[in-house]
Image (cartoon, rainbow, N blue to C red; front, top):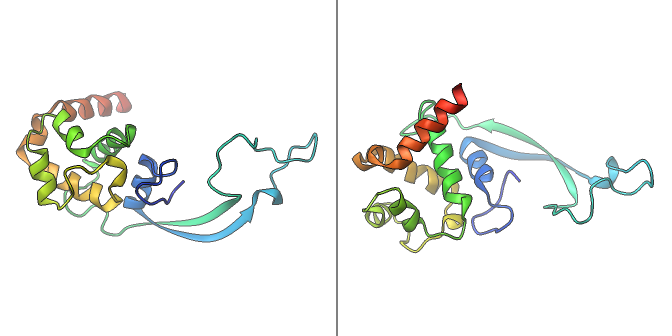
Length: 163
C-alpha cells in the first residue's frame, strides 16, 4: 500500500510513510484482479481469498520524487537514519510517540513534541508523513539525538548494509 491515512490500522505502515514523504503518488489506472490474475487449474482467482487485499484491483501509479526531498535536515547521508526512525516508530503503531522518544534517551521528548505542535499522547500511527519528516529534522537539529543508542544503532545497521 503506497498511500494511506494515519490511523488506518492495516494499511498505514512504514513503507507507506516513506513513499508519501519521498514521492508524489498519482493513480493512473485501476484494473480488476479478475482481468488477468487466474489460476490455470480451475479458472478462479490465483490470489487466495484468505489473503488481506486492500482493494479488488491492481493500480498503475506514477511515482514522481519530490523536488524538495533533500532540503533541510533530510539529505542523502541522513536518509537511512530517517528510514530507520520511521520503521522503529511504526514497528508498534499503537505506542505513544513520547514513549518512543524517551526510550531513545531523549528526556525532553514531550518538549520536542510541543514545539512541533504534536500532542504528547499521539500514537505513532496517528502522525502524518510530513510530521515524521518534521520530527526527524527537529531531532537532527538537537544535540541530544547524537547521544542516543538510536544513533549508534542506525550507524551499525548502515555498516551491515554496506558490507
